[in-house]
Amino acid sequence: MKLVKQTVFSLILFLSFQSQAQKTINIIPRDTSFNISNEYKKQLKYFPHIKAAKDILPAGVTENRELVYTTLKNTPFGDRDLHLDVFSPKKNGKYPALIMIHGGGWRSGDKKLQIPMAQKLAAKGIVTICVEYQLSLEAKYPAAVYNIKSAIRWVRANAGKYNIDPNKIAVSGCSAGGQLAMLVGLTNGVASKEGDQGNLGFSSEVQAIVDIDGVVDFMAPSSLNLTRKPNSPDVEWLGGTFFEKPEVWKDASGIFWANEKSCPILFINSGFSRFHAGQDELIGMMKEWNIYTEVHKFDEKIHPFWLFEPWVDPTVNYIYDFLMKNLNK
Image (tube, rainbow, N blue to C red; front, side, top):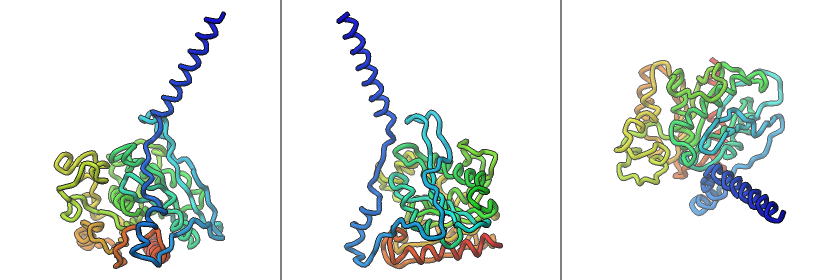
């Protein structure tokens, strides 16, 4: 009897350890270094007047947070839900929608970094959707593109529920998110960029793009630093250096997907020119096709300006005015 009890106890202990080991294996690796607190401390010594934008729900705005927009099956980390937050004007009607993509070098950051701007835009009459996507420690390019295209399809599938006009959907992003917004928007209708993640019966096309300090062309001289280290954010995300994966570096560059049917683009820039690599060339192409572009620049050398006052409100105003001009034609 004693031997039986010991055997049962050993089996339970083994199964417990095995279960715990499985949980450990399934933990998605996270880099939490890019956050508002760290960035505030970093920038304060150069800009002592700044104030971090806050998550404060305005009157007249409804929020729905942590909604699952797709579930990824059989990833190395098990089945994986991806989430988004929706901020909607309370008044009935049909509103334009803006999918908002956070930055962080494709490796860090999270969707809550977009919430202060999303809330302010919702108060002005735009349904805003802050999107979670797979970062480079979890999945390499083009996983994030497939995620965001799926989120856009989810928005169209749920347009009636959140008072969204499905014919007026835009995408925006900051830094790495701006690069993603550009690529997602300029690959409207490109089957190879769709992926297979949810609501496949709906379109992922957008009618406008907002790029906030995000690279347009990885192949441009100011972006293509040939001495990049293996742990550089772009090298990690693209799965290798330019010498190792030149076709991937080109494929991820939004400029190479632009064409005469591309949608209008708003650029909002910091004082760091390297984040605008390829922008002038793309604008020249868009002018030839008679497609509207608009550029605003903050001359201060602060990259994540959208996280802080005094730049948040003007950034929101630029976005709102651009969307009203181009989505209401």
